[in-house]
Image 1 (cartoon, rainbow, N blue to C red):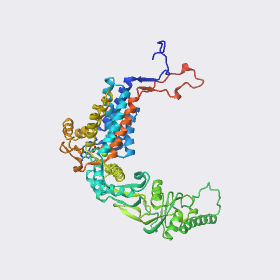
Image 2: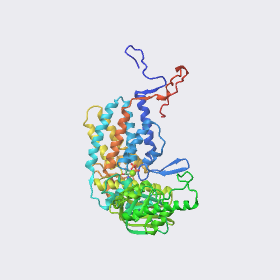
Image 3: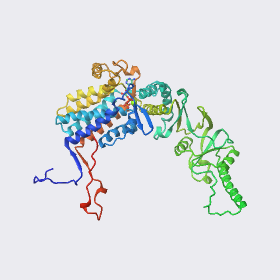
Image 4: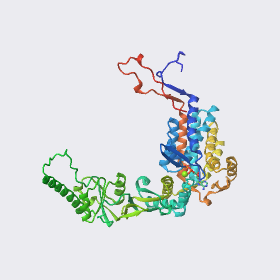
Length: 545
Ligand code: ADP
Ligand code: MG
């Protein structure tokens, strides 16, 4: 840095580190590319899996979002690329690997342009124009569908392909369509809030199923209670139905045995009146966030009521949504308005030994449950991730009713259109638009590569088909172009539009940075009373590249 007089002016404190201009850009791009590289081989039905090891636990997955979430990434720019995956996951729940690969490629292509002295601002402008145009191209090629079952099943299957759950695919596709349909009409964050998944290791995949209602992984608190109540009136209690523990710190000092008995009786009286209050309001099933003591269990059983204790907060919320019940803090204040309803509450055996409570036929069934059976915990977890992808895409298509062919077809179409567009542009933005086209083509390229074909041959074959409609993508068995619609390889439009959007946002954000300053932290300044001479300036850590 040179001041007006040519004398360097130091504006940063000693110990700060700084990289500027191309150095900073190159290192940032390197970091971004490294992230993209880490998920590249998982793309597509024939993609490889990753094994993530954390302490004793190993997760085997093909899911881009999961891989990046579990990796301990520290580099700030690398983290921005991980954000792309998160954004994609939040917005649509599928296409995370695609988005990250495109972001990495956009930066790699930008690097080549920077080397040719194209200014970053020009690249950013060109990328933005290209992205806007890509959105239009994708929207134009989208196909309107009704929410017919067969399209939804295809959407689900495409999202789950390659997740290593091939033999569970039919069952999961069917369940995802059923569950997405059940919650599609409701508002809110459907999947987290309205769909509960219970995993049972050891069973047969085909025994998996969905119910309209909620499964609580708890048994009734006492065998004396009925197993089954029809026309259930449900109370959700935040507190306990329990005698207070008698301890020596108690305010009341009980000296004589008969006083103790009297005290206990008094407490039991309290419990009895609490159960009476629930019954008076019309309640016959009580879900309790905390404990239900023996006395309460007895009174509940005597009245033919079901009590369930230590129900998790999440389950309480789901029960509230589904049954229409309100969470009650003080049991003595309960009225019939606080209660929810369900056609049936029943304890049933699930799998070999587990017993669970099924709450079914809720009038406001804003929640459904999926019970997954699978051979092992690990397999079940991958099943759940696949199911989550499927639920997301099916739900999107039920609502948006827009799909595109998969297998790299949309990316080929976008690339072709952008190249034509580039030739109409003057100036260097043309280069950036071309680079964008190349970057998007990384998807069919990588699909081909991961399927064991020569990617350049495959791209050439796909390009040759471009005049014959927009549905040609890569057949991952033959390596030849084929009609993806005929093959049933379809995806929601939004998976593609969102991938381009989030990849472009991240890439342009990285490109705008030309100065990396590892700032000093406050606590490192000399403390009051400490002589600056006694203080050794700590070396500032630079990001690891
Ligand atoms: P992402 O995290 O981006 O969803 P995936 O590993 O799920 O990554 O791969 C998605 C890509 O695989 C999409 O481009 C999709 O069209 C493609 N794909 C899925 N099934 C098939 C298939 N049967 N044939 C060709 N391509 C497929
Ligand atoms: Mg996918």
